[in-house]
Image 1 (cartoon, rainbow, N blue to C red):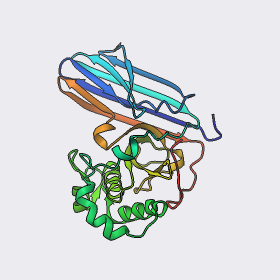
Image 2: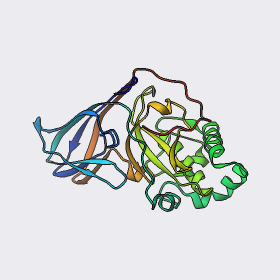
Image 3: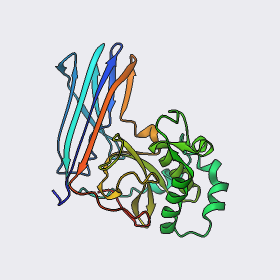
Image 4: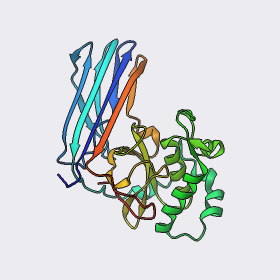
Length: 266
């Protein structure tokens, strides 16, 4: 463990309306090799067998088959410093394309007009500041179907909306970018958090236009093109309602964070 270990947890109560298969993305990334963790799924009060699948983006999915009724999920981990995520050969191509929630092709004229002349390193701070000053963080203000274009038009959103707009603008400027879900010590109100990552000089760098938590304490969960790849819960089969969600993330210290600094998730 490092001098600043982080303790993270999440719990949820679900109600399944019939047989369903759940895919949970709540566990920390395998890049935290020495994490001390515990995951439990219970249906009707009884333990449910859970199978782990690790995706190419190093996201861990835990799959469980449940029947009708109440399902309880609990996860707890203590992590030290992990590894930086490596860059695969396909990443610069895959994460520069437009995607469902990051319409970089539509936003290209705005991106070029606003950020022309910035170097790649300067660009991250410029985009973070631009998005942060043009959007208002308003809980419940966006729909699950909203993408970067609608977010910019509405001038408000939550963390995933900020991340989508950042990613779309960076991709429009030919900087590969992606969305990552994290546990975020210092976040208020506490919840799962979403940030952007940009590929600069061969390393993934964090961009969080909300500035709601220090980037150096964030703990990686899931990584992908946008929120479609990083949802904490996906279900197949009967309908599943989320009745309660509690997330916690703490660190021994919460350092200051200068948005002009280059930070990688570890």
